[in-house]
Length: 267
Image (cartoon, rainbow, N blue to C red; front, side, top):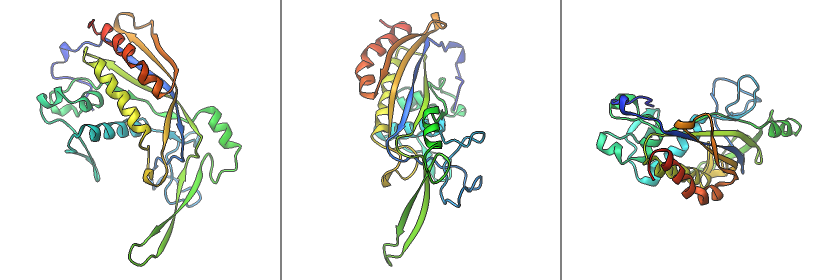
């Protein structure tokens, strides 16, 4: 995604908003790893793991991609750009369309479009918390830190059953701290920040990773802190919300948006 602008000289960073906290797996979580990398215990569908610790983690790309996809669907944006095998996302095709598209303004577009501004959102990888790692290490799980869920695919014509295995992080595990970094380049970004929170709400009501329609991937954002760094006082971050869940963050949005508008010179 683009980090440059065709008129880069007139881009000003007014500040950044940081959302940090924990992500709790309310049901088993499966974010797939490479099929050819590690085959632990002969499981068909393995999860992604940190190559050094072998602990599961949530890739920032998975979290950002899912939130983007849900906002695209919420806004009715066309899936018009292929980014891989059988995967399409929305990318604006003109500067005029881009100016009114929260999806592309927040989540970014390829640099070759020639009309993009810097991507507003950065999403970090999210490790398993030490507390959850210790708890899972001491539990009798099927595999290190994870469980194996058996599923059965049924042939709709013959009724033949084909069993398959899927590796999941068990329900109750927590990942953190997650970090969403939202850069402010315009007074209009106060409204766009609300659309980011909208994406988080859509995700809580949907699922992260695979097999969501079969029960996996329900998550919740927990114990969040929101801090703002103004470009005029970047070394002095201001905490504007602390120890909040998503409904509380939504309730605090008007005050947070007012502060974003203030640092961007509006109001």
